[in-house]
Length: 348
Ligand code: SAM
Ligand code: DTB
Ligand code: SF4
Image (cartoon, rainbow, N blue to C red; front, side, top):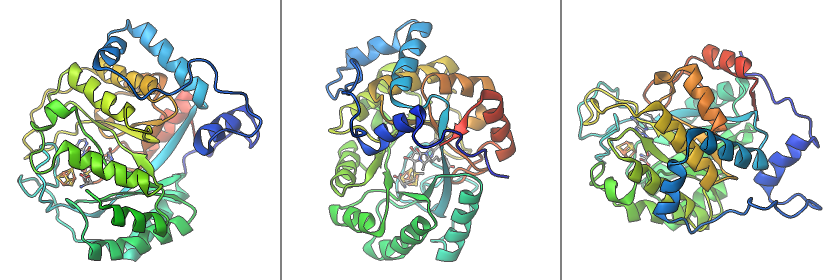
């Protein structure tokens, strides 16, 4: 059964607010209200000061920023599909798909086009607006890309927004993806530059920033975020958000994942993050990048409905919908539909 469709009619205040953010200023619209200007010069102390606000003040400010830029009850729905699974040469300590760790995972080569299209059609029929394809590559070879480009083009032709996450890209590869119709490329910074080396040793922070720059220069939307619960401290969470907010342009999409602890990975026993600290991280992301979609991404199966509600209040306005993330579970669709009903949320 599909998740309930959007309720606001074109031209309504909510639709206009939404359009202003997605497509640039609506013609004739007033200048951005005071406080709505986005900053790219955040210092670590500025960010930590936001993290340290009393919880009601932090949520109030996040709500103000959220409502300035978005329909506060609208949630963007993305669906994930792992198009190439496991056997990845990178050593990301959180990841079940790394060849460095022994996890209970069925390795799968690149899926055939038909299987991808079938999944995309299903996602669209269930109310998704964006289809995100994930491939466990360090970086795609050009001959891998030859097979992915038609997937992008055909998924887009179904009327879906397209997103891909496939590791590091060269500038030329980013251009080819853009030409095929790719709307978003996901590439996460994961954590702060200082903590990064504790989690990944096979590629550098700068490698990740370079890929994000290629995606931006190719004219695609950037999807970049990170993970909470890796054993990082608040300074690292602030450092991650500071890096994202100080990019020359804010990522249009900012996934905040809670670590999914997978048996066999070095982080399988990591201490789960404090729930209210997770909400604070969402709220600070909303304040630093007020016009970006902040996604309550992986980890929702470990969260109560009430915690997810707090995340939406803190400014999260996107989720992954569907019973699978890439290789791990996501909430049942039925449960998410009920959650949307109970909270009066609608997909956009
Ligand atoms: N291989 C590509 C890459 O790393 O860029 C794309 C796929 S990778 C699985 C995409 C992102 O998923 C990672 O950057 C990480 O942020 C997130 N991720 C992976 N495993 C996770 C886990 N166990 N819990 C939470 N997020 C995870
Ligand atoms: C993102 O930030 N989270 C998604 C998506 N981008 C690709 C991936 C989450 C993966 C969780 C672990 C798994 O299912 O393998
Ligand atoms: Fe490979 Fe991506 Fe997993 Fe890292 S996060 S091991 S690059 S699939």
